[in-house]
Image (cartoon, rainbow, N blue to C red; front, side, top):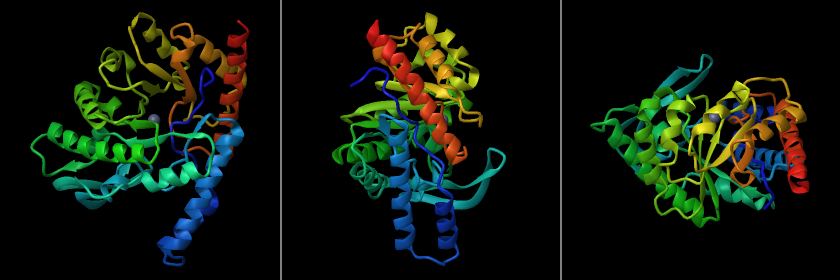
Length: 323
Ligand SMILES: [Zn+2]
């Protein structure tokens, strides 16, 4: 494998025609099989765009998932839904409540992963919401404590991860976006993660974004993961300073693309960021990715950002090999 492999965090903008198909489906104008076929086409398109941009480790853009918790809660036993809750100012989601023991019913991501894998010769990363975020973004009306709730969800995530690995997944990323808002619960998130990956025979990454890494950093080595994929571009790489004194032993998925800004980074900015990163970490410990999922950007901008990310990375790579 080449140095500085490039990848994505997971989500990607849905094509407009897929949004149209979804709205037709919700109004009963098209059936499930037509929607399913549109979803398949959208996944192929996203995989192809990742390939065209030159990304090494791709995803299907999570086309089939509306958001990060509801998707799983709908497919597990023990949840009920109370209706729309407002998040992030504008987006809404149907916040689930645990009202009975949460139980695994059937694989949730295996078919989407297998489909993606059948459409590309590139390595496909599987992504899943982590137990801490699944618990934190639901109501708990059953478990005696948040810890109990998180650990139960960890068992569920573990079953799914094992099924993904059986289906051929060799790289799985566990997303914990809820962690930065409760950094004091990092021990709980860590215990949940470690239980979720127990006996899972694959490379793993944990994705966290927009958090205070100075608080998190001392705990990161205790996660049984090969990698942390973190955001750096949004704060102009200033968080790298924290890694100067740390004994961080994991690989770093280094965020070089700001997903909250529509301006497309130049290849030189990406190159500059990676070189800063290499002041603190060995090149064989660094992967290159956007700060977070690209879902909320216009699709054309998301694509251009990936192109800049790949071109900037290739520049650094060629300089490293000449050295
Ligand atoms: Zn993120």
